Length: 210
Image 1 (spheres, helix red, strand yellow):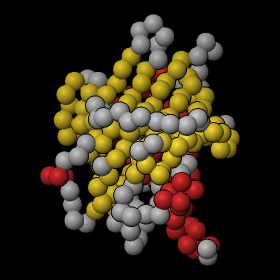
Image 2 (image 1 turned 30 degrees about the horizontal axis):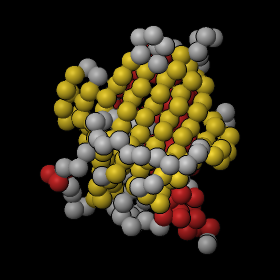
Image 3 (image 1 turned 180 degrees about the horizontal axis):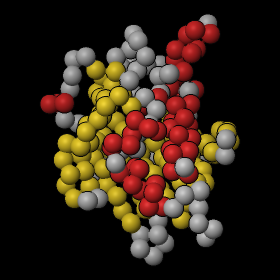
């Protein structure tokens, strides 16, 4: 593969880190997590799933920030341009409760590929004993949001798990399964799975650490 083509496909997955949450069907996973790489203090794992040829991604890192700062950033769509790689625009469609909302997002893809759009529902759960806060994610299938100039992502589940540590830091676990649709080659999706999501995690860490 020519270097230009490799750089081109290296951009395909920048949409896959978006951490919207919802009440969509929880899919069954299979296989064990395998450590793929540790880069810039982020441990990156992948595993096979039984519902797709695309793998699921997990990333773990430690952030030197209080948990409320991280929660505020994840929960505020106005901050997304500062840290979400590939974010073009988005809005809250419906705020169901303080811990549940529906969000519409448009994601940049490189020419000549069509941009992606995504309708998703966000749910936040809080464990009052452990202090762990979880943002869970799933895409919503709604034909009214389809756009002939974009490819709609309809298969996505993700989560951010925020675990406060005794030393005042926060361990972040990020999980993601996303089919970017549009007939992209599966082997390239899996090969480049973590590249763009890693950029988002690093940007988030930098933002909340100040």
